[in-house]
Length: 267
Ligand code: LIP
Image 1 (tube, helix red, strand yellow):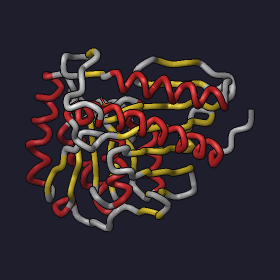
Image 2 (tube, protein in one colour):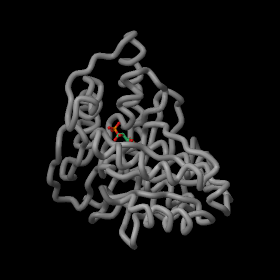
Image 3 (cartoon, protein in one colour):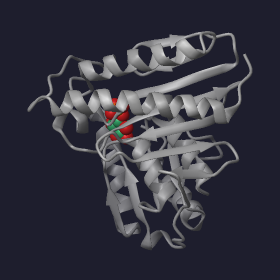
Image 4 (cartoon, protein in one colour):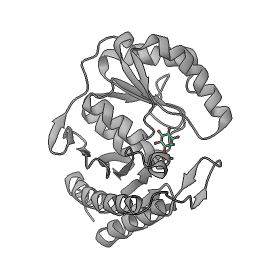
């Protein structure tokens, strides 16, 4: 089956909106959302909305494209034969979702032959939807977005996040101690996909985090890059689990050098 990124994006956006309606309605139906289970640590939670949303997304994507591959946060991977692989976080920002904080997203990316070519990040609480196809720019609700013009790290508003493991968090806090005095301020909003979209939209000048999974990063990383952000890791590595950074070009080199000096990509 041929794979046009624009067609993949249409399917991804429709699916993300439907999944977003499901998770939002489920959250609004209860005062307190129950924890259905935990994963890497007792604070790494999953709700029945996470699993229901991922099941819906799988069903919709495979109904249209049965030969594709799939990598989801909650229910593992499916090997495909079409050359298209979907990388999905049904609820990025699950802890925010659990607490009723309206900062969570459905993130769906399409890889063609291993390269992300289309992505959508949809915030069901705000209704905001970011989209991109490779080479086609980044868009928020139909309006093209670009990174900020910040040209000095000391004036940069920088987002970050922390893992679920206490030992990792202690190390991340040690790095943060050195970052805080070097920048305008820090924001920790709790959803990597939305942090990456914030960089794309100029709401953050940069974002970095250690320990992201492919489903946290895939769609938001494309959107940030298509908005003009420098997206990568440290020491010449691509963005990935060791360290993911997205920054407006005016601060990317300064932030990269600082994070490399601090060993932000190491425990
Ligand atoms: C979350 C990320 C966030 C990170 C959290 C968690 P989840 O993903 O979006 O940036 O700081 O620790 O990994 O678990 O909500 O899909």
